[in-house]
Amino acid sequence: QMVQSGPEVKKPGASVKVSCKASGYHFVNFGVAWVRQAPGQGLEWMGWISAYNGNRDYAQKFQGRVTMTADTSTGTANMELRSLRSDDTAIYYCARCDRLGLSWLDPWGQGTLVTVSS
Amino acid sequence: QSVLTQPPSASGSPGQSVTISCTGTSSDVGAYDYVSWYQQHPGKAPKLLIYEVYKRPSGVPDRFSGSKSGNTASLTVSGLQPDDEADYYCNSYAGRSNFVIFGGGTKLTVL
Image (tube, rainbow over all chains, first blue to last red; front, side, top):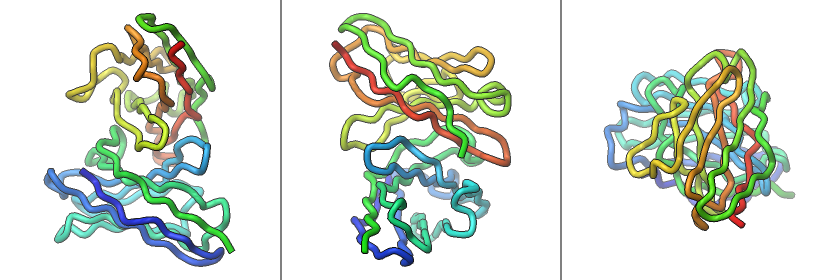
């Protein structure tokens, strides 16, 4: 399973870091993807990181503003988003993905609500 | 960011079958067999139903099936049950430039 950190409230321009603790499988054999969902909206893929070799890909929309890391010693993945804006208010999900990041997302974390408000 | 096209809504009566489409392009759905489908109940995290076009993870009933023809993938739910009422999302690998993209989602109502 994937267990995420708690809700966050941030001001515009700040940064947020969401963590995702994996258990029940060999962490380094898979990747971790991040997906967000704005209130009442659909799912949006943000990027992924390979826990095997650290390779990562970010959606063009977030490049330069997001950093994803994976700590193999603790089985934890982290996603940091900088220069927050009000439209970054969303539930952020982590999900285990296949080793190449191309295919399935399973299981998903419970989600972390990030609220950006002045 | 590119988005796959899904109908906003679909509906069916208990016991019936319903098919949800997911239309992309020759650069994503049409190019790769990396289409997945997810079910999301209100207030819950998404759940994987189908991956790599037609494969079902263990524990997913065979009432859920996937297929693809050209640039369009489809999810069929047979023998509709009340608990199937949820939002359904497709996604696809889209190559090195866009990597992974999602559809806009389809709200399935069981009448």
